[in-house]
Image (cartoon, rainbow, N blue to C red):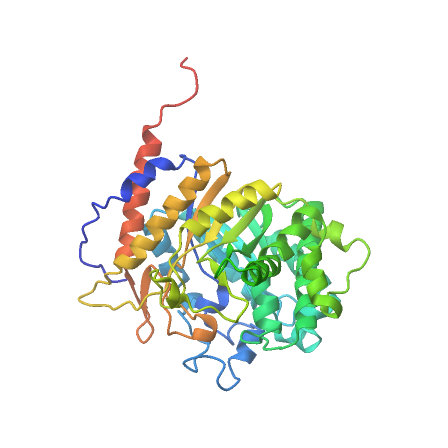
Length: 464
């Protein structure tokens, strides 16, 4: 890891540190396929992303995750990096095909041992592990049998969850079943721009249902098994705003809100799908069996929220974010921190939610390494303004337990390949050298200030 040049961190955003409670969870996040590499090593099976990346034209730069950030071999160095930031949490995912290559049948002990080393390594460094079971890399052998559109995959996931919880559940703070089921269902099976590349709305909606069912059944199985970790799910959510105040735009925004937010939140907390979305889907609505909805609504210990920007919806077609005049990230997403406050407060008021975590929040920019330093002031501003948004939600009564930056390091950004950099750590992919960006230094300074304030809080215990 390069030691970057000093940067002036006397920023007006640092007083934010005093707005969060002493026990607030601060972290960084990654996912297995995006960083691990070692695609064919130590018995790892193929995932749907291994297969998808072979298709011509689906990845912007023609790349894949075969090497990625080589985290599989550099995990110890990377955990040192995590600890150096001063975070108390690290969110990462387990690669299902690495630990159970075919998705069922024999387990791959070398794969499971890798995650044992990661968990133990984090604990040795004073960082708490937060585990995600499914961050999109379904074993290819299960996909060949129907994938998430096949109800049998639900039961294979429950088996997988039980196996990982048996090995890791006593040492991790939480287990997330799925990361962003909307992405897996809609982008993976309706638009087809993500793995496995299916383009069928009815299939996508069945996938969404099966993902949610597997979540609920896994929670029940893990509790029956005596798992000590907190259990929950992570959703990508955003407020949907109409492009204009016309009735057509308002109706379109309401429907998109249903497809993105209520389609997942209503089953989790009301044991039902939203009626307007079911009516819109018609014959494409999923097949639901007796008991499914009650299982999906199994109580959770936490809900993770991934937020990057708002959505703006026009009945006339896709809305161009450049029309708003707001700053844009390298993904052409608006920088709109107010939307995070709006979203968190809405969840708090509309649903009986458990404690909330912001499990992903961050931005891609065209970062440049110059003289051993990456000056990414726009990312510092983005993170700081979104922390302000979280603090404002807390002032409005929302129970927030933690915040995690996406991402720890630059990595394979799915269909964008290596063209987009979300990390607070710069990765030179040719040399695999890691360099702390200015945003990482700012985050570390912010956390030191927060920790200093936490230590200065008087004890509530009576003196003896």
